Image (cartoon, rainbow, N blue to C red; front, side, top):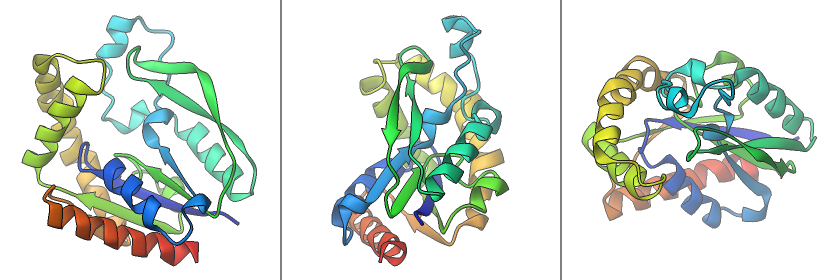
Length: 208
């Protein structure tokens, strides 16, 4: 039966980065699949682009929890799924899906990974990546401007203080109490190296 690993943490805490590095170093990388929680945003296809841009994507209600739960249960049974793909340029789901074939370990990473008890209860390992708010803000500023359709700086800054930080304080940070381990990642070479090594060890613990 596939093992489910949940990795939560604030936006731009380095979840995706250290996870991608760690997966390359585990004992059997071919037996690990990584899925982003971002792909489970609700499509909001009934809203205009302008209206979709105003949605609070840092609130738990922005996610399609029934679909996520259904697909996790299918994967745990060894069944393949058609995972949605979120399009950041259009603020909705792509018309395309991605076929996910179950492997020994399936990692779900995202800000709300530890939010719902029904999802946590399906996990074999729960982790939280912690990082200073200053570091997270700078990373997000760079990431969203250069990697997400060149969003303007003023839009990124407004979004951060209007929704990202308040929702982190209210919903994301409190979920670290549900984690089996908290991994600190402050962005220095030494910090990232330690974070990756710890994550490798933890993933190996459910992979072996």
